[in-house]
Image (cartoon, rainbow, N blue to C red; front, side, top):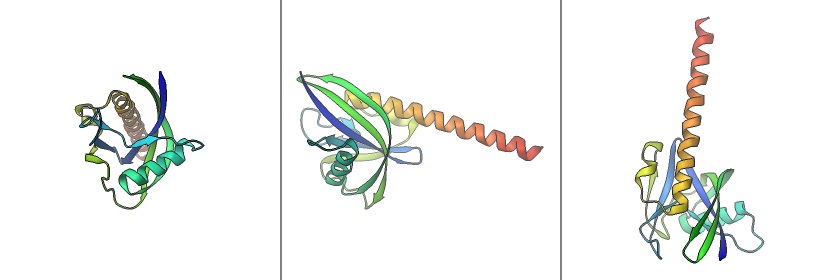
Length: 148
C-alpha cells in the first residue's frame, strides 16, 4: 500500500484552533486541520509553511510537534505529522477549503472530522486540558503565597 507523508498545522489562538472543511475530493465536506503533502527534500516544517501559504495566504510560525498519526484509508496509508502553529503575518483567506472556523476544546468533537484528524482533535483536547490544569495549579500556588 502506498504511504503518503503529510503535515498539518494546528493553528492556535488561545484555547481555540483553526479547522477547515474540505471543498473537493472523496472527503469533500469533512473537516480537517490545514496542511498537505511533503515535496521531495522538504522538511516537515518547510512543507507546512509552504502549504499554509498556498491554502490560507498567511505566513506561520511552526511550533512543537504535537502528534504523528498513522491511518489507513482505501488505497493508501497516511503518515501525518501535526505541529502547533500560529499566524505570523497576514489574514487567513480560504483558497482551497469551503469553510473554516475557530473551535474551542468543548466543541472539538462536534465536527465530522476526517478519520486521522479525529485522532488529532482528541490529542488537542487532552493537551489543552493539561494546560488548563497547570494554569489552575499555578494560580492556586500564587494565592497560597499571597496569603502567607
